[in-house]
Length: 150
Image (cartoon, rainbow, N blue to C red; front, side):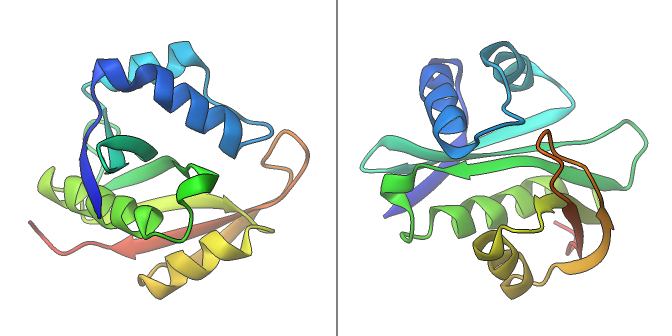
């Protein structure tokens, strides 16, 4: 069973492992992940299975904004297909709505069909693309979902 909870400082080493395994480039550094853990303008959630951290989602916002952003979401390959990504995304939406945001936006690699399928299944609508967004020159697709008030 997947359980989502707020990330804690003692999760940092595992968050770094997941980040480095999930992404070939455009990785968040250990220092960046640590800053996000304590930032008042971000929320980091972790998915656990049998008490072990198997994924994370990071949302952020700017003061006065009406929309929050899903900065990053990653699941350990060994835990793939167990619903951790879906659980994290739903929890991120709830966390953003609880803070009064009316929408959640995200960018995803145009070649990440699995993630795009999940976003579309959960009601995200594509609203644009950003060529040359990633380190390797890949295009990002932009998605948005209106959130129900908490």
